[in-house]
Image (cartoon, rainbow, N blue to C red; front, side, top):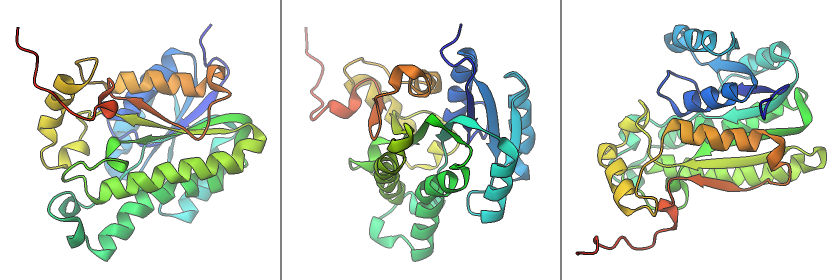
Length: 258
């Protein structure tokens, strides 16, 4: 038996097989979950449908988190669910470099709407779909609580997302619904490569982190399995770090010379 047998979990943000959401899907499926995947726009629909076919013929629905109509259609179509994975973020490329004070008002609003408010919007529309005792999780990053050069307004949006996780945990706790976040280390996804200097981040993490390695999307997926399962029924309003311990480092000493 799998940890997630009998559970239906809706996963957003599966853009392609290299995305963090894709790693989450692989591990949820491996542990027996019935999956529902969403896509945003025609550009990624075929890739998501092909991906869904590899994992038990998962149901696939369009979901534009900026559209109330799209969210209503999703809620009407997906039925009851035991889990919701929020793996959605968007920042205009010009706002991922330079100075934070150069962020445009429109760029700020777009980043906060899609990367943070979208979790509120999903829960608002899917509240009636969530079974009591369900698990909601959001994918975040260290840039929400620490300075990561060039992450800029994306980090501000992640800080907002983590605050939303805590407040939703309080609002939904009376139904036994848990809301947590997974803070993933730097993973080479299409969206992450938009951050200036990202290509060097993995090497820095693997050299400085206590476990002396970087992480993969499947590592994040394993944490998602735990949060989706009944093993985590007393955990909520928390951020779980999957970054080989990098977040705990305050200073990065040079390697000890033999």
